[in-house]
Image 1 (cartoon, rainbow, N blue to C red):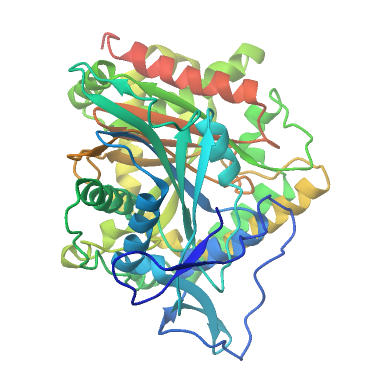
Image 2: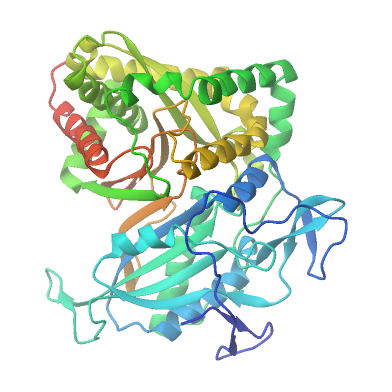
Length: 509
């Protein structure tokens, strides 16, 4: 099914006409779709504002096939669902959430946000037995940045998609199985915004399935990225210049000296086509509960414990091939929700991309393998110090302006079949406990599993760890980049992390 347009003021049944699908579906190493700013704006809707630092970086990354986020929700429904119902739910989401109605345009020689003039949603129906492969394909998708929409919905029937194919739960209630996949360009959303979308979409779908009246009030606002101004006030030009020069040296001039301890024993594949692939793992509810209790007892967050396990798993892999490694640094980027630095009264119901990166290195040695929780407390203390005291992520906000140079550099290297430049081993993006932001519950339809991924294969890291606690379970996926890690190495790394986390639950102090 192609994307479609609905009449802006149509009531009742959706009025639709076909529009051509986005032609860009595969990653490339050179720009192909986002033109340069001009002084002649195109006809369009209401102007909003210029793009912020992170929004501009995400937009420029689109030219290289990066920064598409994809979410998959496994749905259990008491009643059969159909494509028309999901299509209508998507139209209503367009009307309810202001960030879904935006596209790019030019004004005064700069990129601006502008409202779309037509009510356009990109919805298709798919049938597959391999949801993970479908997600992996959709994360390569490109968008019509200057027409919109900058998001899509895919209604997935698993297997044959016959409504007679259903399961019964422990109480013998019928459960019809579906998967809803959503894609968003990262310039118009972040993890918090996307979880808001998932919750509102599930509410709308439940109302439609039950025959209830849908609440059409707008959900949230699309504010100015306040962190840009706060970052300019917090960080000096000298600080920014120092960070830029250091990254230029480590990524470009030394081809990633901070990660040499790993890539010298696990060589990067020589592939001309770069892509983001994923591995999905999960801890059951009982194990997750025990892990969270142990984290609380040790005075660390799950994020700190996971970061510690990510470092130590790397160390185990490296020492298996280089037993004389000794003390070394494991380098990490942590995705930070920058709303934490906003005044409290301005934080609620804010949509858009409001994130930054906190880059830290953690000294790691062989003895840390036998003292997991002590090491985790050290990781926690360092993270807390830079989040609250130095506010390093806020000071580095302006770095978003220069990150596009790194994307370009790695894209060119990939096209030439050369190893990528990196200055961190991995990125961590953690949505935490979703029990308050996305419960997954509903009277007719509920979400039972969650997977999220984002295409970042030209970022200066080897992989990205994506995690959250959903319905009491730790959901984890490893986004690895095909020109940097083989699937075998990525799988060894991901399973090593989960092994360290589970084995640490009963580790003596």
